[in-house]
Image 1 (cartoon, each protein chain N blue to C red):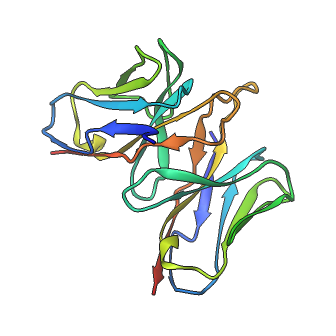
Image 2: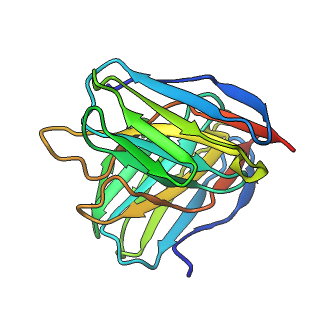
Amino acid sequence: GQQLNQSPQSMFIQEGEDVSMNCTSSSIFNTWLWYKQDPGEGPVLLIALYKAGELTSNGRLTAQFGITRKDSFLNISASIPSDVGIYFCADIFRAGGTSYGKLTFGQGTILTVHP
Amino acid sequence: NAGVTQTPKFRVLKTGQSMTLLCAQDMNHEYMYWYRQDPGMGLRLIHYSVGEGTTAKGEVPDGYNVSRLKKQNFLLGLESAAPSQTSVYFCASTNRGKDEKLFFGSGTQLSVL
């Protein structure tokens, strides 16, 4: 099956700093998704990427779909305390063109922001 | 604005006990899922359903059963709990054609002693 590797596993930063995390896969992807999980909650979709080279922003968040289609990165600018949480990359698992919304998640990057 | 509701939020079981986790969504979504989250392993799909009365196995289905008797509800059952099933369980739902945007519940923390 698809393998997703996220790095770093955890980050400790000061408020106001920029953050960068990435995700690599063992196979070519058609979609890259970035989800965020707040403490005690379920994940929420932040950004969806659909084609190689695509660069998409959502407020202070920017994500890119790598040209090789085997990687993606997520940047957060000027971090604030509410950025704390776990960030997951994910792909839609497709078999024969049908996905039924089954996602494969990376291991997650735990972000801690010190005020 | 309920969205996806999971009950219970916390549960402690002894090895061999059984229990059922309930997931309810009020968004009229076709697809529903059960994931488990373990430290350092992300979320892994247990079972899923693409419509009322249908279920299918995900990545880690062993030891679990599911039922989707009503469109809005998706039940996850553990017939004989094992310590390896200690985890946080998340239910999610989405609609056909919106595959990338799953709506998750807030999770059930299960400990099996």
